[in-house]
Image (cartoon, rainbow, N blue to C red):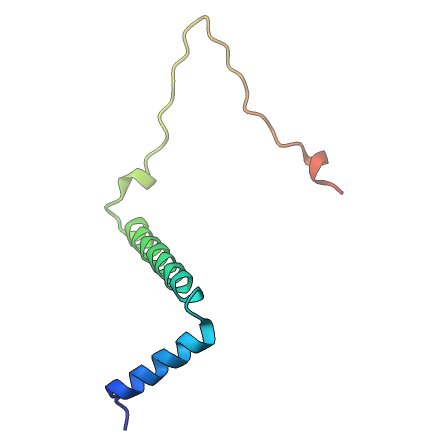
Length: 85
């Protein structure tokens, strides 16, 4: 009790095939693979962000010096009136 034999796995595989169909199984497996890849990349990103040896996250952005003839244009601001309904 507790371990599945080859016949048990065969019966389970046949039930899954009958329930979901042969067309939907490859799509489901592909979606599961994509989800696992995304999960792995997010987990590795969390580990690298949390490590103290990541100086890129703490470094300030470089500043640019303007020559005498250049003009500074402000960044476009969000219009709060557009979001009101």
